Image 1: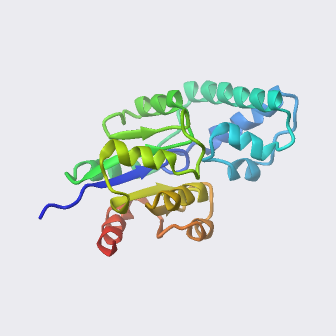
Image 2: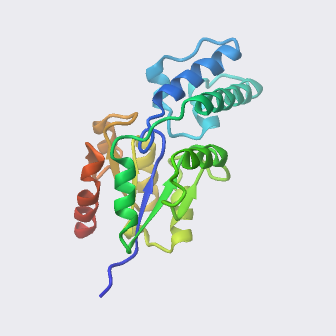
Length: 224
């Protein structure tokens, strides 16, 4: 009997790519262009993973809508300027882990990210990773995490069942999105939210490095 189709969906910022420096620099620049005091770094990192308009609203709940839109545009512009000069690096082991999983006939890979389509396409091209993913879900056209819309779309596009899918991410929003979609969740400790917070949000396990990913997935699927 053949193994069921498996789907492994990755978050991007803080999971596959170390974009912390760019995120913080772009946030500071966005607020500076708007004539505002930027949030503390820890507070800015708290909202990573949310779609940009939602993240800005979390940071500035009392901001009028035109100001919130301007902050989002300033952030997009500043981030694009930064990535054009110095791309954010992949985390150690990320490429090898993707290649190992992609080589398995029963495994399909996907992305669910708060980035825009333009931002994700640029990142995949920069790191020559277009080959890796069968489905890529972005903030464009989807509600922000933790709404399950992106995972529901990934399941539809690949034909995988929710019980055979896993979401891998670095924030509680990723874990909650997985739970809302009926999908298992794995956290990574090197991202923006703590391991304890990831477990509290539903992570079945928290990876300490990419070398442990394949074995952790196999254990999770065996239990399921």
